[in-house]
Image (cartoon, rainbow, N blue to C red):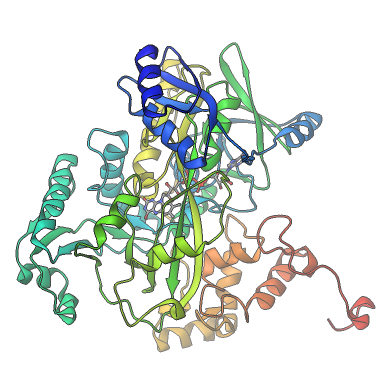
Length: 587
Ligand SMILES: Cc1cc2nc3c(=O)[nH]c(=O)nc-3n(C[C@H](O)[C@H](O)[C@H](O)COP(=O)(O)OP(=O)(O)OC[C@H]3O[C@@H](n4cnc5c(N)ncnc54)[C@H](O)[C@@H]3O)c2cc1C
């Protein structure tokens, strides 16, 4: 096998010297030097596509490029010096939608689950910077794990939303074509949807049907030839989902440790023993790796180098509320000009103009391979790509209130890696969870629960479900969505709901206090933003940030200077400058 692959690789990349090895699991490891980052990524994809290859560990370098690498040595030394600080049954690494989804699922069992997160809060990685689409499953390759879990996850979302009380809008997604030659694309997507088992997909051949599905297309006077419709396309605010999962997990006894970086995985005789973190050693019987963009590095710490993650950045733009979204469904209009756009995004989603559950237009994302896993910069090209998905000619760059980026944790097989490690028993990999990871999250949590259960049962244990397990999370007050009468009643009960802190989004002090008093306590300004939307409006926190900071400091018993924007290092205030304040007077 290796000779065949070597030959194919030397023909495809004649100028590049590569050292290739393959292990018993058909994982190919490649070393050598490339001319550019894109070429390095191309080599990885090429090798992964060779017959029989399970996945690729890409250790190539790029001429003249320093590829940023995370250094875990100080965190490891700090943790080892502190020694064992905790013993638990399961450690989950990473508090994104995958880690929190699994934590919430395992919370029903009578055992100790600890989620370890290097950031200051839940939902700070890819889970906070995505489109929030609950994809139906028509864009995933049939036969892949991704396809299976996307379909299952999509079907499980309503139950998550009902139990956890987050907004979920089954808005549906429609693609129309104005050029008959493009109907082949619509038919192909429909066929893939049928093959994958998507719920009620449809292909249609008339403008009338298109207008029935999305009446607002009538404003466009298009010569529609047909298209495809997927009613099971849903929309959520992903941070709402993650926070709901985390709070429900915490309500059921899961412990969250923030600002805690896993720097090594402990193992003995092929069995996982726990993790070393900067806060000390946590002993555990199972370690579940949900570290997103760093999952390959955590897997390597467990002695299981079986995939490499290459970050694929996506840039999104969100438009001001005053610019009403043009359509109610996610609508794509294909004329010849969209073909190039589709090709560029072949490995990720094509991007679209989405309507958030808060009724704002969300545009993008782009798909750019980046060597730095933490590259969150917005470039002109990526933003132009995102804005290219805007179909509403009445809106444009002037309406953008926020651009943001997320980095997809793609591996070279472009599939999810979910398995009990065959190298380190007790270590469960949940890696390479790129899109549609959000849509697949409930099914991923269920799959991991099954892997864990099977292992525990094989060891002769029958895990008991807690008698007081409660899958429900109460809805929080959302002042902005209440009628005037409801608002008045609420204010009469508690006047703090009558004090507007964020004017753009109409967020009250009462809602901020509700968030602070929840089971996963927010400690930074951005953490409050994710829970309440304070700072998400047109002024982006220009007016409310100081007030949020003041409330946080007051409620958490901290100094103003101790409240950060997000992680350590993102300080907002450094010192008191006015003499009166220094002397303890009025700040
Ligand atoms: C632009 C973009 C658009 C997308 N759109 C969609 C979409 O519409 N629908 C969809 O289904 N999917 C979408 N996705 C994919 C989806 O966002 C991801 O699949 C999903 O969020 C992955 O969740 P996660 O929990 O695995 O990763 P993350 O959310 O990144 O969480 C991983 C966590 O691990 C932590 N961590 C890492 N290393 C360590 C360590 N050493 N110690 C402790 N903690 C650590 C990180 O801080 C992070 O919080 C999109 C992704 C992007 C980037």
